[in-house]
Length: 117
Image 1 (spheres, helix red, strand yellow):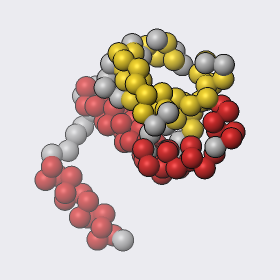
Image 2 (tube, rainbow, N blue to C red):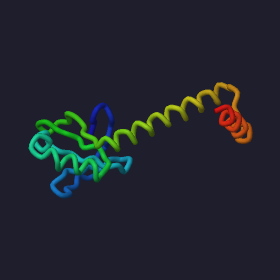
Image 3 (cartoon, rainbow, N blue to C red):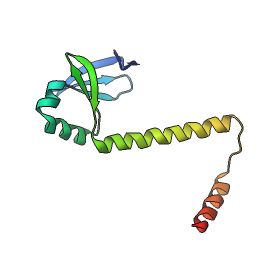
Image 4 (cartoon, helix red, strand yellow):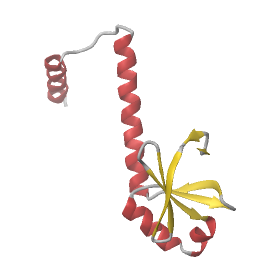
């Protein structure tokens, strides 16, 4: 299955509390709701997003249309993405041979910066 340009390769499709839940190859789950559920039962969708801390995929006529997320889960996901970007940048710099610091050098530099505050 292709969703948003990503090959999800769905294994089984399960039902849980009237939610369609698909498990794809990375072992992650997708909670799928029709747009009518968002329109008619917003508080239940909001509660589900808050409790599961997972995105809820919204469909229109059986096709993917959007994603609803709890604000906390969204902020947490953004923090993870930002951290991954920084780690990738640091790894690219290391591969290019740019100067790196040992753990003791980094600690010393941090202590100096803390003392300057």
